Length: 487
Image (cartoon, rainbow, N blue to C red; front, side, top):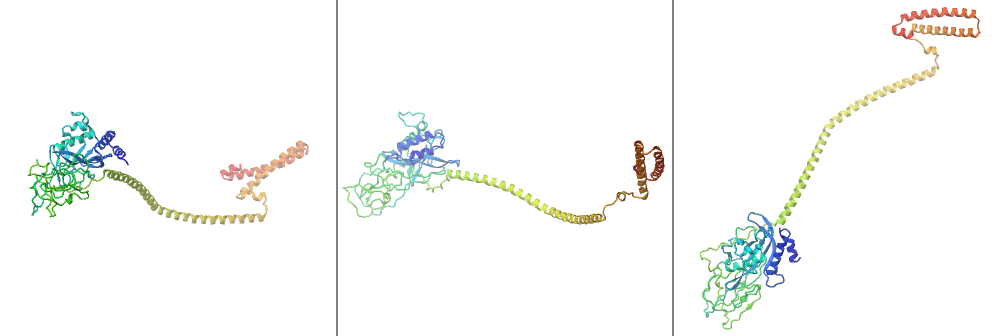
């Protein structure tokens, strides 16, 4: 992935992402490594922790800021954090001292290394793009880097701690020779991690040692990295003690001594160069450790300033992206767990109610079984009786069939003798009446003569009268309902 593509992806979260992308890209093109051997500015994305504990994943421009101080070139490690509200909010600039270096408290730099960007004269117009008094002044992040180079060149923000060195018990006299002006070689160190608070200086990040300073005649005023020289048998001018990157040469030189052996500590993993000194022979004897050279940067510092104890690197802050991912996963798992617990609670309540119903239903089922057993016994008893009754009826029917047909007179009878007599009297009365009717018809048709008709009719009428009189007498002796029925 190219730097521009990576940069555009990391600028999405900014309020003015296009402006941030353009300014960071311009700064990398101006001071960075876009195909240039002398580029020193790099960009990274890291966690920044504010004073109130908030953590943001911000873009950070970092590198060794080249400054010119007393005709020598020095490099100041620094971090420039770009907040989400840039350019409404100023960039956050920190000086990151290397091991053996201390931050110099000044008007514009705190002991923690934080720089008061808004207080630099001419800096407000640079990064806020409000115009500059100087003609052709650059604005934005490039203008801020220009302002930092100018002001750090006037007042360097770091100084080196004096490290005592053992004296050589057998110094070798040598002819006097002009001392060499210190100059730190230009090199771009590895990216340094971010820090979690601003209460103290950020942790040291540059570990590779630097070579001893070179004479002014060979000191580089440009920003290209150069290998450290190897000094052989130099007299009169002391060779500075190897300093870590971004460090400054210590205070005034001691009396001249004879020094020969190369400084192994400062040239590890680097190509070796030698400056032949034709006027000085090589001394085979071993020489004492190198004596620090004059430090131009801390010459104005009071001698009473105590050297603060080097602070151990604070633990790295947690990754906000990982924290956000953990938070979102935790929220989703919590929501799913709550939903599952609610569903499980409802299912448990439903199953508990079913269990209670089943437990209550067992006695009812047993009672119903007993009741049904009783009903079954009663039904079997009734069925047995019905079967016996049907069998008896079948036997009676068979017996009646065996007796043959019964006459009507045998079938129609009264409950008592009186009733049977009444039935017979009524039947005889009706028969006499029918007979008189047929005799009248026969008279009309001429079948019989009148005398015979009258004689027969008189006899039948007398008999009918007697029968009707007996009927009325029987009816008078019967109960009221039966009397009404027969009448």
